Each structure stands twice: as structure tokens, then as C-alpha cells.
Length: 179
Image (cartoon, rainbow, N blue to C red; front, top):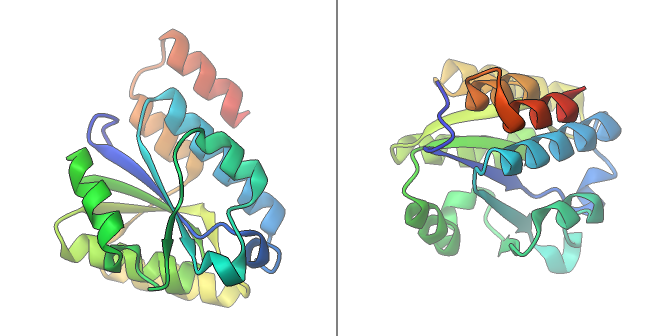
């Protein structure tokens, strides 16, 4: 079970040039926004990344605005775990559960998930908050991740799992976010 005291959300490469060519990009962005907003309500930290921002641009404004004072970690490697700055930031949090979302599912999300798992992290990929240009690539990524023991979840499932109880202000806020 996901535990909000032991979880971090990792957002991978949700940049304008990439998002514009993703399969079902509007649904993807809506779920990413719900997920980011929801984990903020639950006080789960977020680490966000950008693949080669000089060429692919920055994180889409709708999502970047939600991140507050945090800044994106630029990278050129596909796996976020290959970026020493990412590893340092992740290790500093001291959390061992990683919720993973972003693009592209079959490249950066996939490789990040496998490297996190290989380095002792419990990884869950939020399947309705990932995408690829072609649906078939997303499907292959999900199949391979599942076969390799990576957990699969959805935005709503992850938020309610982190919440754990149906009471209080956080519950009310999460309910508003997912509706």
C-alpha cells in the first residue's frame, strides 16, 4: 500500500513540444493536474524533470504553475535516475515509494521505473497519467512494466490509497479534485 509519509511523486518530461504529440493529450494533462494537486493536498513531495529543455521547451504552463516554488531538473538521459541531481534530491527525501507519471511511457517513464526498482524503490506507474505518441507504445510499456513487477495504478486509485481514510479536510479536497 502507498503511504503518504513514504511516497514521492516523480513527474517525467511533461513539456509543451512533447505533450502536443501525445495520444489523448487532453485526458493526460487533466489526470496529471489532478495527481499533482492531489499529492500536494496530501503533502507528498514532487520531483519534476525536463528532457533536454533547450530543444523540447519547458513543462507545460498549466502543470508548472501547480508546482509552486520547485524547479524542474533538466536532463539529457532517458532515465531520471541517470541524473545525479535527481538521485540526490530523491535520496534526501528518504522515501522509498515512488509514484511515476509523465511522458513518454515507453522511453523515459519505462527506463526510470526500472532503474528506480533496481535501486531499491517500490515503484507504481500511474497508467492514466502517462502516454506516448502511439497508443501501442504506451500499451507495450505497461505490459513490460507489469511483467517486471512494477506496480500499476490510476490517478484516483493512488490518491485514495494515499489518503487511506474517508474523513477530514484532505478527504473533502481529494473528492473535489477527482470529481
